[in-house]
Structure formats: C-alpha cells, structure tokens
Image (cartoon, rainbow, N blue to C red; front, side, top):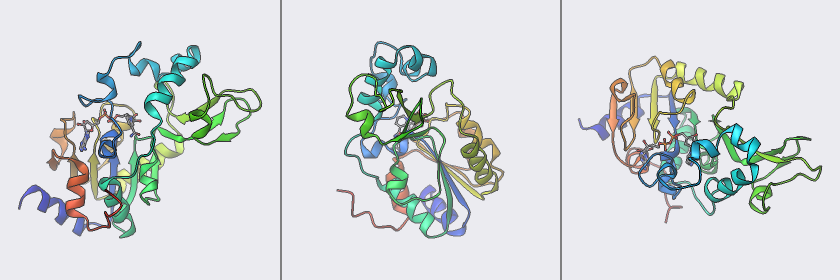
Length: 246
Ligand code: CNA
C-alpha cells in the first residue's frame, strides 16, 4: 500500500479524527506562510516579523505595527482551498471532530467547518481596548494609522501576539480533542511555535499523520508522512465538491 492509500484507509476506518494545522494550509489560497522560502520571514522589513508581531512592539510602536498588519496579515479576496473543503467535508461526514488551527484567516469556517479552535485568534474579530466594542476587519482595513473606536480607544485585533497568552478555553478544548482522538492529522505547520505545537504531545494514538512540505521537529514521531501540497493530498482521498475552486 502506498502512502496515499494508507491515508485513505485510516480516514475510512476512523470516526474520531482531529486536524491540527498552520499557515501551510492556506498557501494554496495564495496567503504566504511565515517560514517557507517565499514566506514572510524571508522578506525584508525594518524589524523582523517576530518583533513587529510582539506585544511589546504593539504597545510601543502601534503605528508601525498596524502598517505591517494591514500590508501582510489582513488578506483580501481569498477563498478556501481544497484542504479547507476536504476537512469541512470530513466533519460533515461525522469523521472529523475538530480543527485546531494556528491560522488567523477564518478560511476553515468559510469552507463550512463548525468546530474550529483558533489558537492564535482571528483577523476577522477586533475589539476596542478601552470599551470592548466589537469591530469587523473593515475597521482596521479602512482606517489609517492607529485604528480608533468611537470612544477614542485603540481597536486591537483578536490575534494572539508573541508574548501574549493563548485563550484558556481554546487551549483546553484543543487539548481535550487531541488527547481523545484516534487519528491526528497535522498539516501545513513547521511546528515551531509554542505553546501551540506542544499540544500534539497529548495525542496518544498510533495514527499520527504529517502532511507537510518541509521537515518538522516531530517527523520522527509520525506514523505517516506525506511531503506534498496538502490541498492536493486531502482532495485525492476525500470525495467533496471542489467546484468552487477555479
Ligand atoms: P510556518 O512556520 O510558516 O510553517 C508553514 C509550514 O507549512 C512549513 O513547514 C511549510 O513547509 C508548510 N507548507 C507550506 N505550504 C504547504 C502546502 N501547500 N502543503 C503542505 N505544507 C505546506 O507556519 P506555522 O503555522 O507553523 O506557524 C505558526 C504561525 C504562522 C501562526 O502564529 C500563524 O498565525 C501564522 N500565520 C498564519 C497565516 C494564516 O492565517 N493563513 C499566514 C501566515 C502566518
């Protein structure tokens, strides 16, 4: 049996799959990841992206933070790709119980996934730091400089910056699903960002699948590795309606 056949067989046999993913899930939608050669970490900015995306930088240089954020993290005219569609279909079929993602682009929900845990938040949600009023992504997109609430407070994205804590509920639910699933599919993540990557240590089964183009520090733990484009791999094993993709 080749790797794709093994993946298909394991998916067919399971009804308790969890998917854990990262930026590589959305590259086929045209959104650059951080660590690939054409990713944001290999482009040139005044400061390294890890610095700009830190809480300290946000507090001291909000103007520069929002410039980078508008240019690079808010995405325009993007659609779910085959990976998002296949995962949403697996949930509809009752096979996949949760998507745990490090992504902040909302594309899993756009594809129809319901039980999604966004470890690093979402660019689609923003709140005033002063009065807590909710704002959509337009409030940041359509403003210049530092986006302000009608009360005068700064509107901050619900995105977890470096140095900031992850949401307790999202962490504990993610941990619960990962520790209780019988098949864990990890995809499109370099598994370099903690504490998110540490969650996969809670998986106790023997069907750990890694769908990632690059190597990861967890490769030796995987029961199956496929180093190909995740959208192509998942769409070759999940029968779904991919007609929305041009
Ligand atoms: P990363 O460190 O950039 O790693 C991405 C991984 O995906 C790399 O190992 C690539 O080899 C692999 N990869 C890229 N494209 C594909 C593909 N088509 N098929 C299979 N593998 C692929 O990203 P991580 O998610 O591991 O890092 C965590 C950061 C990135 C999180 O904090 C995210 O919020 C952040 N991020 C999110 C987005 C988004 O929401 N779309 C975009 C860029 C960065």
